[in-house]
Image (tube, rainbow, N blue to C red; front, top):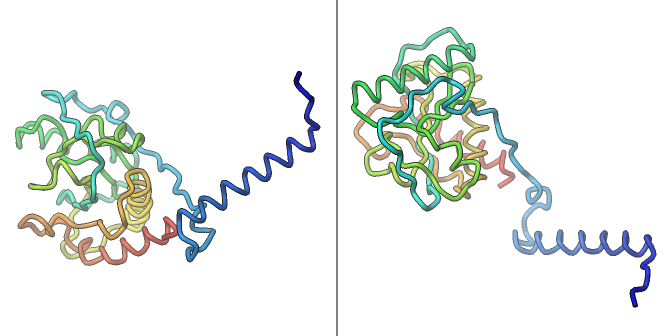
Length: 224
């Protein structure tokens, strides 16, 4: 025979259960860590998928890697530094990149996983990249950095930064997106690199000099 449980007892049990769960989480993260860091979570930035910016379909199926990436690689597009910071320009830029990569380079799709515009707008690059990021368990094989395409998320930042710094909107968006990507895939902020760390190139220009700043800012965003 079931015995009715007083509502006060139910509420008290729920509170105790929540407290126990919180204590367990603190133990798992380590007693020496600030409790506020445990609760830190990076919200998902707005990312336009391939359909939204008008991508062409891939010329052949993309390959899905059944494991998480272990790093992020930062690029610049080396396109001229436009003063049009609009969302429409971000979409045009994504189409221009895809056309270059497919029609000139002969690749099946955009080589990078994601693109960050000078206005700070984010777009999906290679088809399937956004799905992998949001689920956090797989990635699409890219074509952005020789030797790293099956283990690194490639982020193209629109523009050329050999002798000028990127706009603040681009930088802010890059920090947010890297923090979200690290969170989704469990990538340590120390594992953010530039293209030139792996291949002979000037890419990503002055953004490479700012990698220590990027890593530390992302770590702070994650509460690490």
